[in-house]
Length: 388
Image 1 (cartoon, rainbow, N blue to C red):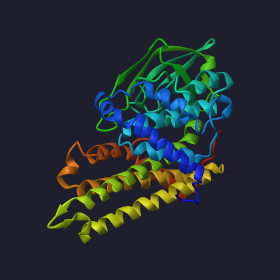
Image 2 (image 1 turned 45 degrees about the vertical axis):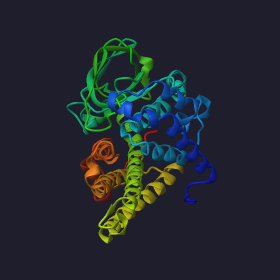
Image 3 (image 1 turned 60 degrees about the vertical axis):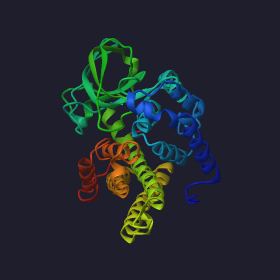
Image 4 (image 1 turned 135 degrees about the vertical axis):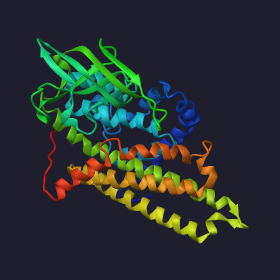
């Protein structure tokens, strides 16, 4: 236990959550990986246990706990060896629910946040578009005001929980003459006429439903606008810090899981009359990988603490995601090598880990985009400020 960040209460939570995952989730993972559909019952069980409300306000059913409960939640999810299942859970909480909590009014929070915490409703966040990718300001989806309604047209892609969720948090242009200053955030029920979704076939994250969403003259009441009109870009940028830290934590956790498995494997596997963990080349490879994991983990914990104290850590979170995801891919690739031919077999965990990890350098801001954001802050002295 790292007592700088985790208390005995944190560790008791880690143990109980780990036991819950082992009993309720792990037996179903291979099925969900094959079908690409996570059975609905598990969302309700997560809700009943309070896992979706760790960081949410008590008045809407949450527990309002410090961020290190969230860190534990993320780390343990990575160790069920299904990046897709983990993504479905954390995208619901830390993407969709974050916007509902921060920008939604009391009516919206009671209608969507409370049932989301209880596991009765699943949310998704719709920002990325087929033609825009990382260019958020260049989105083409529009929300045109007509009387007391908005009419939404356009499309989104690579949306986690995009097919089976109950509601969508959607970014759209309310002012088509502006770039970033013309974006607003809306909440839309899945069953609203004109909303459709197509499931995408992915290299990894097989258990999660990743969708391409189409909006064809979708009419929603003006009450479905969240926050102020035209402030959507600022809201999105504000929450990117949390999302990138989440992905940085995910990366160090899955790398740690891969390394623990590889160390166990080489302690049992024999060649030339001794176990693999007695060969100096492999021992030193493990030492290098363990050092890389630990460096990222300690950095991520330190900026999580700063975020918990109310600091705006957009630069550090970008660094976290940039370096941690690169490290995770490298370490998992190295761990697969330690298993030799067995690392390439689907019955061993490394093949899935390698596939799932690869998305880390793409989703939530590509490594190339992150480098430019960091360069702007360091070289150009650009300052980003929170919108909420």
